[in-house]
Image (cartoon, rainbow, N blue to C red; front, side, top):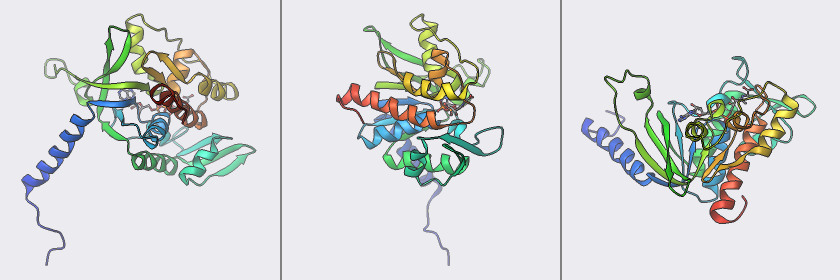
Length: 263
Ligand code: 48H
C-alpha cells in the first residue's frame, strides 16, 4: 500500500514551471529589489516585507545567507556586539556573553533563523541569479537591475552569449558585501566614486557602517559591507551586529522614500 498520493512526472514539471513563471512575471516589477542575501540584505528584506512592501531579493548563489553561515575562519561561530544581540533575541537565536557586551552564537543557527524570518515576512527570492547591470532612466534615477542566470557568467562566451533580462523597482538596495556590485556599475559610468574598504578596526567600523547606510544615488541605497567598500570605512572581521542594524537602517530609508514614514 503506497504512502504517497499518485503524481505524473509531467505534472511535477508543470507545477514548478507554472509557479516559477508566475512569480517571475509578478516580480518583474517590485517596490524594492535587494541585491545580495547576506545578513544586511536579509534584515532589510524582512523589515520591508513586514511593512507591506513587495520585496524581491536577488542572490547569485544557490544558498541564501552570504557570510553569515560560517562567521570567522571556518569556525562556525559569529560574534555580535551590544546592542545588536536584541536582533538575536527577536529571532530566537541562543547566544553566550563571551566578554561584557560581546556575544557569540552558532552561525548556522543564527543564519537559518534569519532566513526563515525573512521568508515568513513574505520576501521572494531569485537565487542562482546574478545582477550584471542596472536600469538607469534619463532622469538619472536607478530604476532596476539587469539579471542573468549565475552559471552563464562562468561559461565561455562562445557557448553562453545570452542576453540578460531587466527587473524594475522603485528602490534598489545594494547589499552585495565587499563587492558593492550595483554601485560599481554606477562607478563604471563615472556617476559615483568607490573609496575601497579600509583595514580592520572593529571599534570604529560598526558605528561607521550603520551611520553611512542609506542613499548613495537616486533610487539606490547601500547596506552592509558594501557601505565600507564605498566610503573606505574600516572592516570589522567576523562580528555581524553592524550588518544586521545596517539592513534595518536601509529599510528605514526605503520606507521614508516610499511611504514617507520610518519603520
Ligand atoms: C547577486 C550577489 C552579487 C550579484 C554579490 O557578503 P555578504 O554576507 O554581505 P553583507 O554585507 O550582508 O555581510 C557582510 C559579512 O558577511 C562580512 O563579510 C563581514 C562582516 N565582513 C567583515 C570583514 O572584515 O571582512 O552577502 C552578500 C551577498 C552574497 O550572498 C553574494 O553571493 C551576493 O551578495 N552577491 N548577488 N548579484 N552581482 N554580488
